[in-house]
Image (cartoon, rainbow, N blue to C red; front, side, top):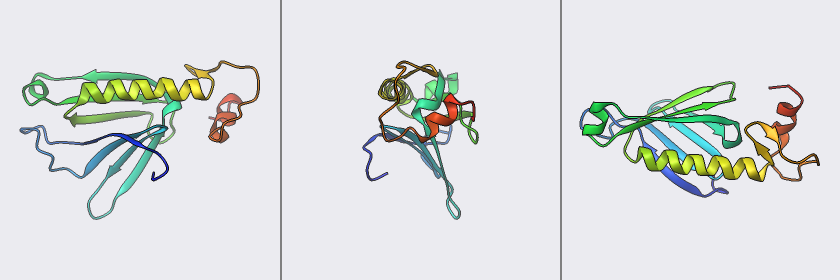
Length: 138
């Protein structure tokens, strides 16, 4: 992660007054969405941005009262096809920044909603998974 810039980092919060007493953080970089959770044993999961298909922002009445929201990410990912980024403070800003980065990453890889924009070979460094997608492997 040191090679990529962190664009935004949010912590999952309790619904009760929006207090950050959980051990889950969501970090958005230029190419990935990272989910770190756990205290004694921790798990780091990632979703490559070009795999994201759809985003939804949901705010319940309770979340609105405490300035929270939930961003729902639908991706073509084996381990995390649907991710709920629950109870984060700057939910609208997080969703908009995530959406913007997804479009940048898909444009950089010459993809648009899962389709190749260019007929030529991709000359970028991060295309090892792209071949699997195009050849029906994932």
